[in-house]
Length: 105
Image 1 (cartoon, rainbow, N blue to C red):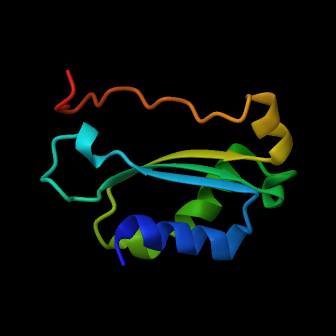
Image 2: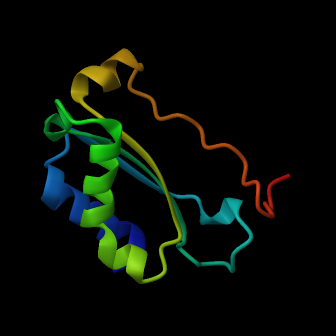
């Protein structure tokens, strides 16, 4: 099972998301092909209600700690309640270009 699938499985099990997108953005960075090191996550879940942004991110970091300890370098996290997701039009923001040696630009 690749890293993207493991991330998806862990997040589905932990948060019962209404919506989940996991995007491997490693190709946007100066890493070897197939590195699976940089991911963007959009997770929409009722479990984020009444939690600060920092608390939400800590929950995801804790859930994904085996991946972070095993070579996952970066996570762009978008952790929203269903109401927040609908208010944002149901779209995940574009990631900015890499500032540390990007291949894209």
